[in-house]
Image (tube, rainbow, N blue to C red):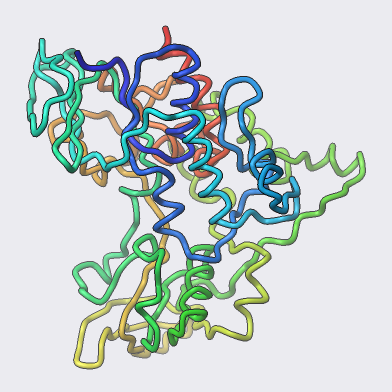
Length: 409
């Protein structure tokens, strides 16, 4: 007979929420590939931008923190100043799932649509339906397995949201950095990485390590690396610049500690803060691996691209007005993610079109619920409502506690 809640996704937000729902006795089903983005879509040698103390997944009570996982396995751990390797974080997430979310069904969701009134037939292969709101939702996976739920929480992470600039859309030899967890196929090829943030630099290093002839091209005039964190600070400095999951300073502290207050700011201000706060600067640990090894063409505006006999031709304009044409075998955009409703293609078009939005992002209330009653969004999709905290895994603490309490009621 269906379930009360379906959680779509299996990253930090989905797993933390499911652990809280399980503890509260809320009937639920989790559907998604565990830590998929971290296992299959990130550069091999990448490290997290967030400090280790801000990289936990959350279960009720004592939970199961990253520090505990590392201690069990004899892995290095420091709360501040020791960057967490991607592979360690992904393995930690899988162990968290094994302990707290045994009900996970590991496959991708293909479609979410309104269920027909009275349709609570539970699991039914290949079923499709649509109809009046108030009957809940039918969630169907790629294999055809489906379930009806009273409420659905989308915790889909980055998957639907890679941003491809207009200049490279439609090119066969162009892609997004999110598509390349494995870059071994680029050995010996000329590759342009478009961008100057953390994703661009991590990917360029990975490509270089795998034998690609790689260049970074960016509009920015220079690459700004984050500074190494200061571990020990005096009382005066701690008061002037408190440390939070989002870094140092009162602005970061307020954004990390008061997402409910952030939601009440004017919409334009919220979107601007989310876009700019803790921008795409690379981690300090990557500077030595990048500088002197990988050429960077900075201060270039990419005007257009086209595929020719010699690969992809890239027309660029410098700040001086000088134009040049660059040629590569492949172009990869490391141009970030934009959590727009139109990109959530698993939502049936009529359902997606019914959602109230703010500047293209889904509009949410204080319990993460959209204008479609019973449909919720957490993680990056909630960042423009609740703040930059939700661009990182640490936002799962607030989301899992608040939303699980709401769903239990």
